[in-house]
Structures are given as structure tokens and as C-alpha cells.
Amino acid sequence: MIVLHALKWPDEIRSASQVDVPDATVSEVGAAVALAETLSGTNMSELRDEYREALEKVIQAKAAGTRPEPAEAPAPASAQVVDLMAMLERSVREAKAARAGSPDATVHDLLRTTSTWGIT
Image 1 (tube, rainbow, N blue to C red):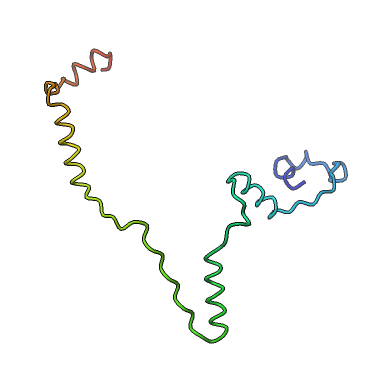
Image 2: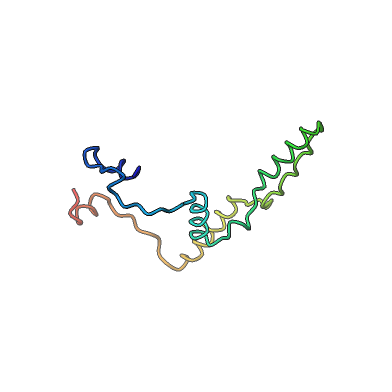
């Protein structure tokens, strides 16, 4: 009824007693989990919340009056440094080598070219 109320003008709303609504219990959390599992193809019960686990450890340590142990920082995904300038220079050399047998590119007058296309 709430959805109908939001979609219709007040004079178009019928009372809930006039609408045959089946008795059904819907769990919003259950429906959300089912939707996420359907869309992702992942069983949500297999996932774990690492942030929550770490936060619970901090809370337990503080409640016990001790200092929480610092969490280990994750290792960086990749420490490989890429020299972009060297890659660009190599790409230019390879392009020049590929064009070595062909004549140089020609430059066309933009106004003349566009006028042949009918653009003014």
C-alpha cells in the first residue's frame, strides 16, 4: 500500500480493505542477500567482514584495558616500477621502423578538405 500511495494521487488511493493482499512475510535482509547472490553468483555466507573482525578485536582489547595490537599492513599489490618514457620511446622507434619503407605522411589543407565534404 505504501508503494501504491507513492505512485498515485490521493484521490486515486483505495483503502487497504478494498485490496486483496495475501498474507506474506518478507525479510528485507533475506531478499537483499538472495538478490546479491543471484547477481554476483557468490555465496554470501562464504564472505567475511575483515573490517568488523579487526574492529571487534580493538573493542575487546580496550574493554580489557590493554592496548590493541596494530594490524599488519597488507603487502603492496605490485612493487614493479614502469618507465613510461622508455615505453613511449620504444613505441616511437617501432612505429618508425614499421614505416621505414613507406613514404612520409602528407599534410592536407583542412579548409580544402572540409569543403570537399560539403562542410563550411
